[in-house]
Length: 174
Image (tube, rainbow, N blue to C red; front, side, top):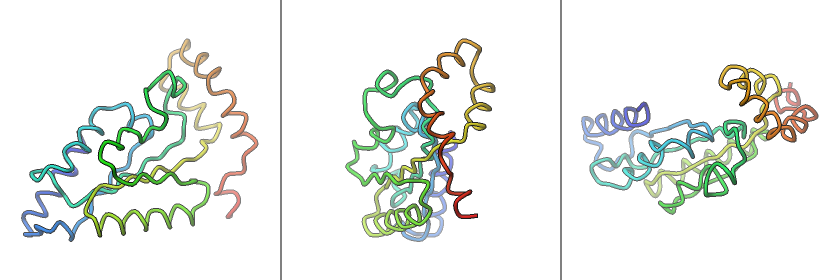
């Protein structure tokens, strides 16, 4: 898995540089919301993060949460409320931030990096944002069969209506 490879490579570099305090390098992993909650490798990576043989001094996990990765509602697709709930087992900070507010995202990422540097533990930043209707249409056609498209359309109709009316941050700032 790329996550294992990235963190394994980071740990090897730390060992090679004799960085036994794990302060000279930072692991950053970027996840989609569906992948973070739905793939076992995310949980496995988190489980290993506290073991001395795998410890890297904390990883910054950034979740791009566009809320369209799932083809079913969260209550039918997982046992928890948030895609990030899998990380609660470590009792680490999980920051949920509005992706439509770039300044808030920057502040939360800085806070997360400060936490990681001070406590040398993993930290999660869940960037929650809308996805444009065009992106939703492209994903639907590329990844789902005709039957799945109609089910997904019904399930996500409310989100689509909201995103059509929504002015995205890129359009506001330009």
